[in-house]
Amino acid sequence: MSTEQTSLLPTEVELALEVMPCQADRRVYEPADHPHPCTYFAQWGVYHSYGYEAAGPPHTPGIQQTAVYRGKTALVPEILSGCRKAPLMAVGINPNLPGYWPATHNSVNPDFENFLQYVHYFRYRSIQKLEIPEASYKKLLGNREDGPQVTTPLTNIGAEIPTQLIAMSMYEAYQGLLDDMAKQLGWGAHKLTVGEDLSYGNMVACPSAKWLTRKDPKDPAMPVMSNAVMEGIVNECFQSRQYFLRQLFQSLPVVLLVFSDATATAFIAAMEKNFVGKAPDPTAPIPTLLSQRFMLRYGQAADGEDLQARVIFTPHATGDPQAFAAQRAKVIAAMVEEAKAGRIVLNPETGHLARPRGSCVFCGNALYRIGPCDYEKELKPLSGPLPQPLAETRSRPEHVTREKAEQQKLMKHFIERGAERREKSATPNPFRIVS
Image 1 (cartoon, rainbow, N blue to C red):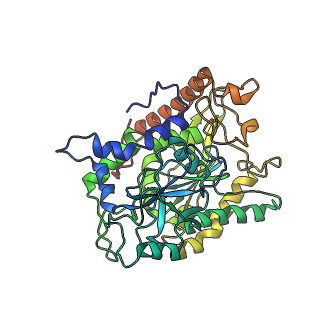
Image 2 (cartoon, rainbow, N blue to C red):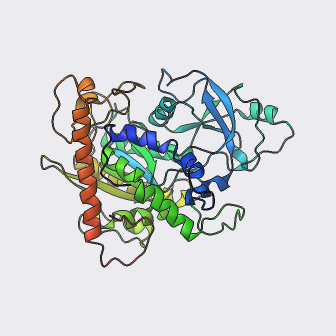
């Protein structure tokens, strides 16, 4: 797929339309005698899923709505969670897999027939996901076995099921970073939250319990991807379809939090030639990377503004909690440093952080509306100032075309700049961006 997109759809809307059916497309519309590498994700089994009882997007922001059971299904690929213009973005390799572990078989995952419900879910998901309360789950299950390889549904398809919000430890860790940064900066009246001020996304869209290239001695039954399959997945999702890169250049966060050694290695391989000055060493441990300041350069906007992001490497908050606890203060210190430098700014009018450069119509546009944009007045498009009123203007085809062209130009130069400087690069990695 070329980086030159001709669609009149805004990038953030276009991505949702492409990513939602992607795994199904790869498993169905491919030659039968040549399984697509992304069919690997099917080896992780099927999980209890739910849909919303009412058609269309919910009228309220939360993800907990009246739910109906959709059976045991594969999980949909994920787009960025939260506000597309959140100034902080947490980055992982690929989404986790609720329900794989025996203790969380009662998790329920979204299986939306309606595109706008999908958009709504990933805009308003914060630190929580959904599960069936333990007592209700056990009552429905009875004496039967359950797990990812069991296809028997828990109850009748279409039956209403009880759900409850369950906080995810990883997302709670994100919130803790925001809270402690604000505390150190004396922002007593802030409303900083995950989803509004910190989005989270992945370099590959489909979930698995682990990004596994060798057998896990603790769970040898976990599906392992061969090097060829891994390279095929990365080529399809990251290189060719460029889901992550296109989102990155629409979001343009001012801080990127890169979690885990594995993600750090992949991220550095992809971005190494676009760091300002010396690039991070992909073989260096996280504490070493945290002791240095790294800036990633997106490029120069049409009006001359130099667009950059601070990249903060950190241990995985739940995968390696002891290492995360040991380095947490340094992560917060780096975030505070960016605030004192004026790159992270609290907007007293909203109680949230000021949005980074660029336009966004993800929540409301000429095609649909899932909710209000609380940051509309502060958005500064890449393509120049807009006349009022913004809500109507930002959805006009001419603005979408100009804004998208600026995003594509930045991304194209970013990729070309990396390719030009990579001739002597040594360490092969499937996440290395190719032009």
